[in-house]
Figure 1 (cartoon, rainbow, N blue to C red):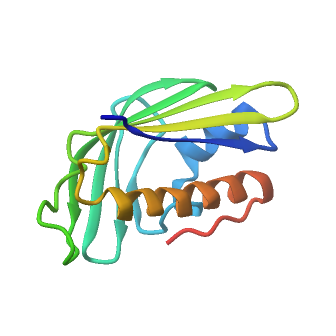
Figure 2: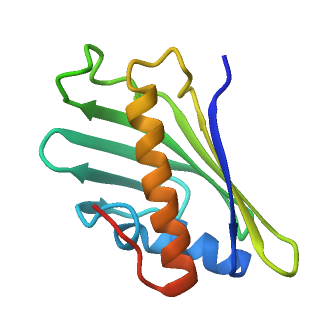
Amino acid sequence: MENYSITLSVKSTAAQVFSALTQHIPLWWTSAYQGSAANVGDQFTIKFGDNVVKTMEVVSLVEPTKVVWLVKEALIDIPQLQNKAEWAGTTISWLIEDDGDRTWLNLEHIGLTQAFECFDICTAGWLQFTESLKKFIETGQGNPY
C-alpha cells in the first residue's frame, strides 16, 4: 500500500522551511506543544484538545534538506475509530528542495496508508496543517489548532 504523501511549493528558502519544522511547530500545527524538535533525539508532544495526543522523536535532521520524526505514542480518541493508536510506529518524513525560485516540500507519512481506519480523517488533517505550514512560512502567520 502507498504511504500518504503531499508536495507543496513554497515561496521561501529551504532554511526557512527547515526552521518552521524544527523551531516553530506551535505557530502552524498546534499551540498545544511541549518539548523540542531542534535536535536528533529530541521529543515533542502535540495535542488537539483532550482526545488527540501524539508524541514524536526527531530521528533525522539534515539541515536544510530533511526532517524525520518517529511517532512514539499516539492517541486519536474519536468515536469513528476502533484503533485509537494507529499513528504509533509511523514515520513522518519532510524533504526540502530549494530550486532557486521557490522551495519544494515533500511530506511522506510512512505507514499512513488507505488501510488505516483514520486515513480519510488524517489526510484531511494533513491538508489543513500543511496549508497552515505554507501560510506560516510565506507570511509569518499560520492557522494552528
